[in-house]
Each structure stands twice: as C-alpha cells, then as structure tokens.
Image 1: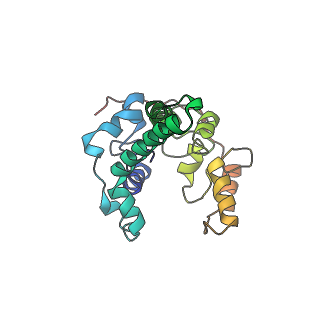
Image 2: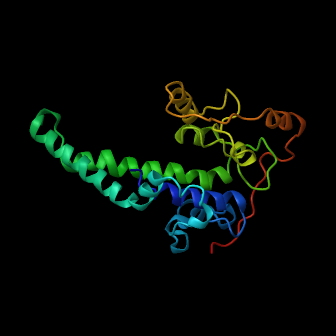
Image 3: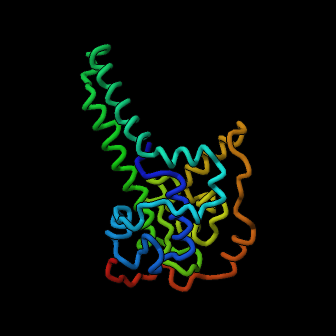
Amino acid sequence: MSAQRGPLWWAAHHRVHHRHTDTEIDPHSSQHGFWYSHIGWFLNQQNFSTRKDLIKDWLKYPELTWLDRFSLPIVIFTAIAIYAMGDWLSVAYPSLNTSGAQLLVWGFVISTVLLIHATLCINSLAHRYGHRDFETDDQSRNNLFLAIITLGEGWHNNHHFYAGSVRQGFYWWQIDVSYYILKLMSYFGLVWSMNPVPEKVYQYRNDHEVTNPHQPIQEKESP
C-alpha cells in the first residue's frame, strides 16, 4: 500500500546494504552523492529485481511471497478504492464537498509521495547529516528529525552498529515510535520475540569514544 515494492525486495536490498554499506556494491551508497542514494538507485533497472538468493529464509512465508508478488496490484487497488470512497461520499454526504479525485490526490498521491521520500531520506540524509554515537565502518548517522518523520528509523548509526534489536532508539530519550507500537502490540500477543538491545552494546558505547562524530563523506561519481 505504500508503493515501495514488496517486503522481499526490500529485505534483499537491505541485506546487501548492510553487508557492503557505503561501498561500490551498496545499492544506495552515500559515496555516489545525495540524489543517487536518495532516488536514483530506486529507479535503476539494476536494482529492480528481487534477489531471492539473499532471502531464502524468508521464502518459506507464503504471506510475504504473496505480498511481494502482488505489490503493484495492491497499490492500484488501494488507489481505486480511495477514489471510489470519495465518489461515494460526494453523493452520500454532499456537505463534505469532496470527490473521488480530491480524495485520491490527498488520501493517496500526496501521502504516498511524502511517505516514500521520508523512507528514502534514511538512505541519503541519514548517511550524511547527524551524529555518530558508535564507531562503524560506514557513514551512518543518528538524526532526531529523521527519527521523527520515519517513526524511529532516524537512529541509523545505532541500527548499523547493532541491527539485531527491535528498537533503533537505543536510549529512552531517542524517540522510536515504531518500537512503541510494536511494544504495545506485544501486550496483546500480536508480536513476540522482540529482541532487546544487549547490555554489551551499552557497555561498548561507554568504553569507546567516537573520534569524529561528524566526519564528512567523500563522494564519488554516480554509476
């Protein structure tokens, strides 16, 4: 529904990103400049297919395979449904002064564009601007503004240092709305096995000072 391809596609690219962050192999490396890491890679034919060889452990889930296969029809159906709702409201409740086209623009087009650019900001801005709380072999940053607009993903340096935790805001003052929602869902048995941040991560942070928390990056030409 977010028009950002399927879950298996994202998982495969994300694994490549973590294995080869900010190198030539990274599909959205910050080394190739802002625009390529933000949107260029997303439109690149080379990155269009789903690399199933990298996510064999996820292929056993039929619901994920189904969502990945029909990601485009789901988006189209959502747009049509929103338009139909607006068209119905114009007849059933004319006092609302709405229409199918109006609801489609505001309820789907604008919201979808804003959502996808917020997501892509993690690939671009979160590797350029912010603070490095952990020494990593990449350019990942922690950024409060990005954490707010992406519901927690802005604590990207944390995520690259230790990606095995359900939360990306490792400290109570690091706002992580996605984690809060998942935690609430766990109380109702909707999610489980939520891996916490290990104590060794906090210990490492206390024992190691980041030498250059705002280190600039050196860009290369886009491929």
